[in-house]
Picture 1 (cartoon, rainbow, N blue to C red):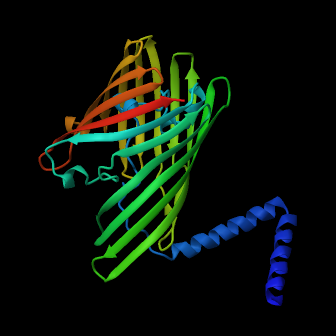
Picture 2: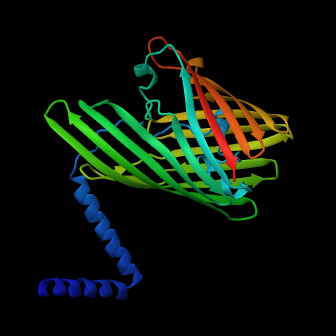
Picture 3: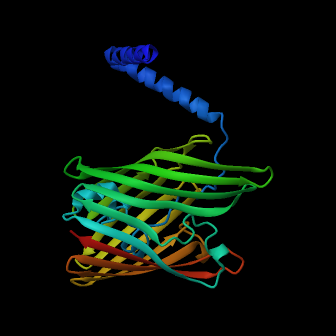
Amino acid sequence: MKFKIARFVELKNTFYFFEEISGVKKIIIIIFLFICFTAMSSAKESAPLPDFIYNSRTVDAKAIGMGEAFVAVCNNASVAYWNPAGLKFLDRRYFTTSINIRKDTKASSEDLFIADSLKGKKLVFLGLTGSRKAISYIPLTDYTGTFENKDIEIRANKYVFSSANQYSSDMTMGVNINYISATLGVIDRIKPDINISDGNGLSVDLGFLYTYYNPIRLGLNLENFPGYIWWNDYKTQKLKPRLRTGLSTRITDWLLVSADYENVYSIKEEFYHYGLQQTVSRHMYVREGLVSKGLFKNSDDKYVTFGLGYEISILQIDLANKIYKLNNANKDKVNDYVLSLSLSL
């Protein structure tokens, strides 16, 4: 008992000492502890995971219908995913969900989901948004496969806390604070070894919207800037960033045009997005889009999108169809359908 009291007094004195030292010294101590922690984790091996594993799936049928050119549009309940700065422009509270309802193709399931981190999982987004704030749930990966002579099974989900502020009369800034929960199971095919590891991660997304005159809006979103996952049995994993930038403008009252550039550093790919939205009636919208892996690539590196939107009182329904070809031997075509529902609260 005396030993426990002595230890408590020692810890208490240490805490008071830490409180009394200057801010600069506190920062030095924190940096030193972080370096020590990183050094200890660097002695471990890296988690055996493919590069695309945390890319999740594109969110929101409205954005998909416009060719995923949405970083400067940001007028939907999924705005926290595309650009948190857009939260400033939502005038109501919304509950929203996005579901991958169907994929039509002649390809095998193995070819269809070979680079899909969610392996066909239906639910891709849940969110509750309000003026300047939002909370969201995004499943990142639900993957089972083989990588580097190891059978792996990983589950990872992201919980997003978003906020936006008016930086100036023309500039809005937003931030996502993301918590990542993950579990990884690995079976080594060469040596008889089975391991199950838990991971916890943090990442930050930064978003900016600039209104250039009234009809032209410029957007920028920096995802995983920075981002890390700390595993029990593996090295600390740095998440690769994703950059989106673009512009949107309303040419007339019934025509919205947008264009985005996207760089996905995890798979070292660049994409160019183009989208249109026509207002057919007060409550109905028609959308078209094009996505290309380059400005002058062949047709196999492009895919087209179509979408419909309809508002019924407090409910907004959006449906999108993305048509693309797989990179398999037969170049099989895929019709990918996504449904989004947004309920005004």
